[in-house]
Amino acid sequence: MLHIINSLNDPLCSLVGDDPVRSEIPLEFRVSAHSEIIVLQDSYSKPTAVVCVLYRDSVPHSQQQLLEYASYAPSVAVFYTIWSYQSGAGKQLIVSARRDIQTRRPNIVKYVTLSPQTEMARVFHLRNGANVLSINEDSINYQYD
Image 1: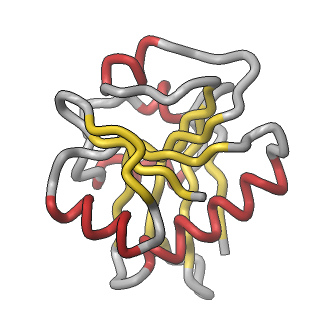
Image 2: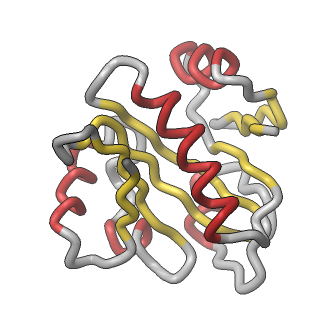
Image 3: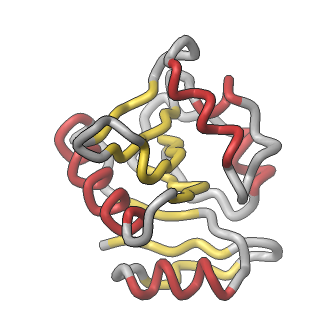
């Protein structure tokens, strides 16, 4: 089951404190008119994985670009941080989140990541069906078709 955080008053906002990748990004950026947090929950409503998504009209190639730009006609979903509390939940979350976004936001036609240049990120995304879109100075964009 997916839970969409689109309010700063949502009690699950506290999960952001567990973000191992981009902990410095403020909650107000993660939950706004152009972004949301998607939480995969088990049958007991316990969080098993979390992903933060920004909606924009182009692919950011750095965290600075991610933070500087807001789009009013988004066509790209940028998964910029993901973490899980259960083995296999990250993959399940990416698949479910994409399906959910396609239903709720039909204008989104491209699904990419802004990932750190780590072996763990590379293995995760390639194993889950993504392709390398671009290698940047301090990040890699993977695209999910």
